[in-house]
Image 1: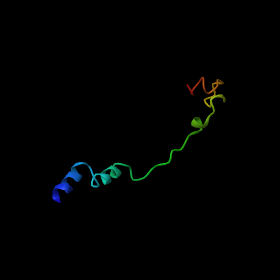
Image 2: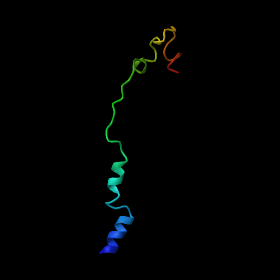
Image 3: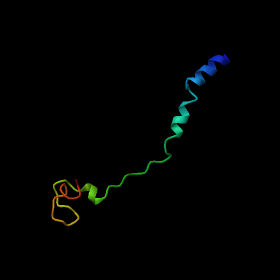
Image 4: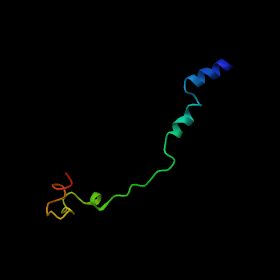
Length: 59
């Protein structure tokens, strides 16, 4: 019986599953987009250059 328990532990059986969960962060932080991230590609660039965003800072 002990040999079977050792072979399961060596193969990464049930004892290995909690270790994978411990590697993840405890809390997830939300990603907040800025006004620059929300700017459409064909809109004027928010920097004030007069160019389209895709040709100025969106490249």
